[in-house]
Image (tube, rainbow, N blue to C red; front, side, top):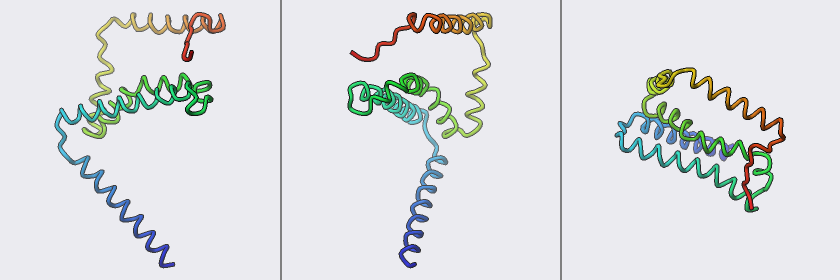
Length: 144
């Protein structure tokens, strides 16, 4: 029983230390330069990790199943990583007000809304034609 209590004590102390460090990081005043450096480093790292998994799968370093079944998922994760990280770091550095300010900028349209409708329907039309012709319109070549 004493070993279990010691283990529980160590787990609680580690949890409290981690919680305190995260609290300190959130309360710290970050300069704009350090925020930008952290954002760029994490965004590029996570994007290239997602794409590196695809590369390793293509070269046979890890399971080929990943590139065969999850190609578009990993391409999408890598491609949308800047957007995902901007929402995450806006919340981390500025709280809920930072996320609200970021999302408010999505409603500012600088182009005529009919252009957005055209782009949306063009993509739907092109995708449906590609599906009709069994993928012969879009060729994705990802290996030699």
